[in-house]
Image 1 (cartoon, rainbow, N blue to C red):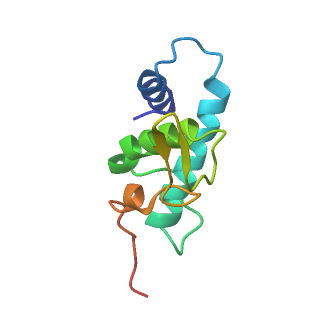
Image 2 (cartoon, one colour; image 1 turned 180 degrees about the vertical axis):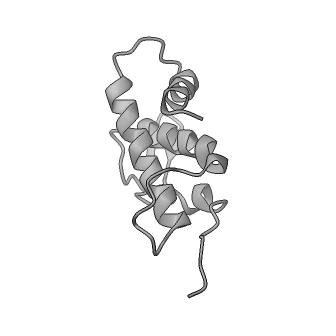
Image 3 (cartoon, helix red, strand yellow; image 1 turned 90 degrees about the vertical axis):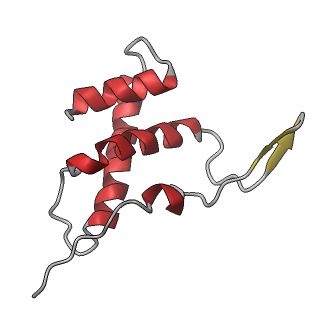
Length: 106
């Protein structure tokens, strides 16, 4: 999946039709990639491409981060019957649970 395809997927998931948010969404895709790469390659900082099997997860994490904008780190919020709390201030561990760390034998 190319970066343009990932951007298109994120825009579709968020219901964004114009290009006014492209720069922001690209940053969120980059942040999501960084989080996946740190989990997948904990001892190799030279990896810069998200493996293909995690491309969709990268989009899901970017959408999650975009939707949390303005409420970063919120642990609880209640207003008019709507309750919000977050697993942690970062991407939930449950989202990264499917990322399998890569290891090599020395």
